[in-house]
Amino acid sequence: MINLTKRHRYLLSILSGLLMIVSFPFTGSLTPLVFISWVPLLLIESNISQQKYRSSKVFLHAYISFFIFNIGTTWWIWNADLGGAIMAFTLNALLMSITFMLFHITKKKLGSKIGYISLICYWIAFEYFHYHWELSYPWLSLGNNFSIVPSFVQWYSYTGVLGGTLWVLIINVITLKLIENKFFKKTQSKSNRILLIQLSTILLVPILISLIQYTTYSEKSNPIEVVILQPNIDPYNEKFIDPLSTQLKKLCDLADPIVSKSTDIVIAPETAISVDFLEEDLYQLPFYKYLKKRKNSWGEIAFYTGASTVRIFKNKHSHASRKIEGGPGFYECYNSSLLMDEENVSTFLHKSKLVLGVEKIPFSSWLPFLEEYSINNGGTSGTLGIEKEPKVLTTNKFTFAPSICYESIYGEFIGTQSKKGAQVIFIITNDGWWGNTPGYKQHMSFARLRAIENRRSVARSANTGTSCFINQKGDVIDQSKWWQSIALKQKINLNKDVTFYSSYGDILGKFLAFMAFGMLLFTLIKYFKRN
Image (cartoon, rainbow, N blue to C red; front, side, top):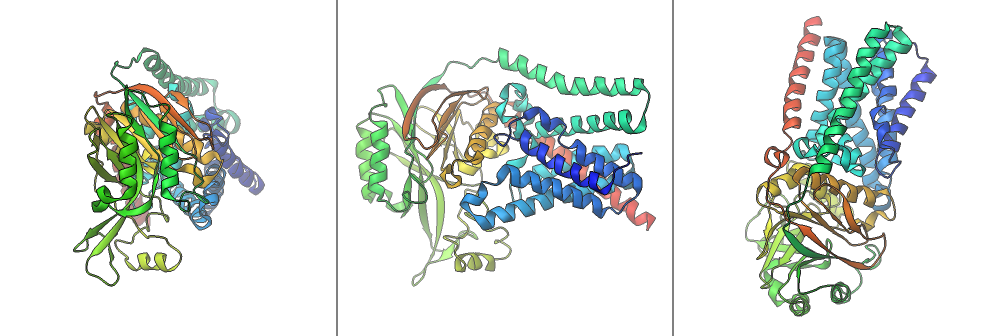
């Protein structure tokens, strides 16, 4: 029997939240602690169950742990958007607590063994759905913890990030049972030895497999030369205020001394073209003529950059379409990327995974009045238009996965691009909104997981940092510093082979979500039978 006082429970819930923080990348980076970070919270749940206390106590302590976790790891959102930060902290902690509460109820109704299995199923189902629904926010997926130790998770090329979440949860549950047996149940040492063997095996075997993959994986030699630009333009005081011509000149001046005859593509960051323009007018615009002239001076080289674009439609195109005031038709705004290939043929591609609150008003497709509410209360543009599915872009020499900012944390999204023929991943972003905080470091670190999942090299151009090159094993081979104006050049290898994860995506999430639905159904049946 676990005997905990009220004070002990509160201390343990705080401890669990703190362990989650210090094990997360760049808010502690003590990665091994993630394997015990849930144990204090699970001890609380076990105590409440054994003492037959109200289930609401489980929810309360879970909310304390997850609220601390959310604030401690993503407090930097505050720098960009106070309202968005408060919403992220409170709502995401609420969703996590509800998920944990479902585990407690299932354990209470169906027994301990099924209960702990349900914890794994419910949590992975929660993370899986967090990639796909209107309030999508997968930043804190447990599998992201390993982005700073890529040599431990080379098997993500099969499971993706959700495999890391599964690993973390199983080890936490086994550790809990070991602690319960040793300190509370005083069970025989034989039982504990079995648990220790299970714990050691599940902890060490995946690391061993990964290290073997890491040391034996060899990239096929198929190089392209890439130049990435980091102009270091302040997003608050320069980017959307200073003349566009000044910013484009800075970009081209950075590229001039480093571009060579062997360079294949130059990459500039998200919204490097920061002034809204009609896509159909591109070839007549002064900035395009300037870019074309500077680009032609480099030779037959492709140029890939971010832009803010607008399209006009005769009829309403999507829920992001807005009526043109004083005239017929509709318009949509986009966070776009623009590819000017070697022959200056230009192609636009629009960002699909939008940032909540800033680029997307949740549920506005069902509740259209929310769009108007946003615009009337300080929203700059409401919900932006999107591509309906992941797409790739192609130069005369290769095909790449274009990833704009937030899209780079969606493994299955980029996996689909790889399946569609992308041989390399290009990420363009503007992380300066968050300042010199863990935010931009975490964002860059997560890109290392995309490299592993798809066995694709990554070139990342950020406005203020970190710009970098990542190889197919997730190693950073060159990077810029924060708040640095710089151009970097590197030869990286293309790869057309498709990994298991690229082919099948988050199949683990789909399967465990199905199991979670079944367990929830049986829990409800059990509940109604007893009542």
